[in-house]
Length: 218
Image (cartoon, rainbow, N blue to C red; front, side, top):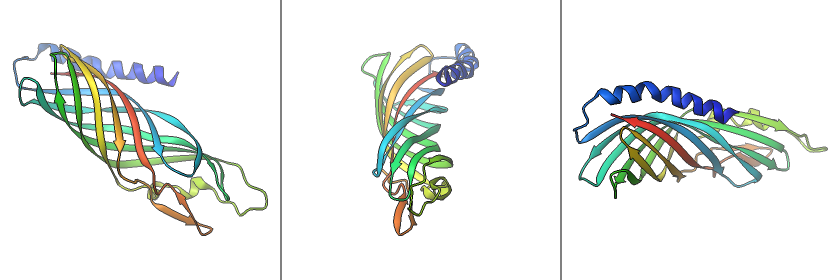
């Protein structure tokens, strides 16, 4: 049901831009577009016994500048919802943490078009953390000091910046485009939190996510 609502929102969001694109001239060596889609994200982190994918939105704009008939450069500015659901089994915490991390991402992609309608793309991205939300379900451990992980893991538990590599493929038919992409986070985004003499938080966490997207360009 949540995914159906997100898909409906994306179609409604793109529709007026598709109408605008129909009336603008097409003979130019650049395109300006808007895109939206779904993220399927995880945190590549140690110290958990199970991890579930978080589904979130990506939404933003892009600029595609042709260099040759087959190559282009495409910077993008995207809101991107990342995170994961983590199951911990630690000495002082047994439970689940739902980690929601919301970023402003700037990928800069080299796009290769082997045909007029198909492309592959690759490039670095920089992410800036906008806000976080952590929800926990705790299970106290008998005869052990216990603390609420949700109170310990806050926005201060994560670094401001994320960097990585984005790679994917897409199709372009007229003003419409769609594709899939994978983001490989390279930066450790977590900060160390020491409680009862032990490290908590996600000091070695890295963002990994798969993206599906649709868009229009004019």
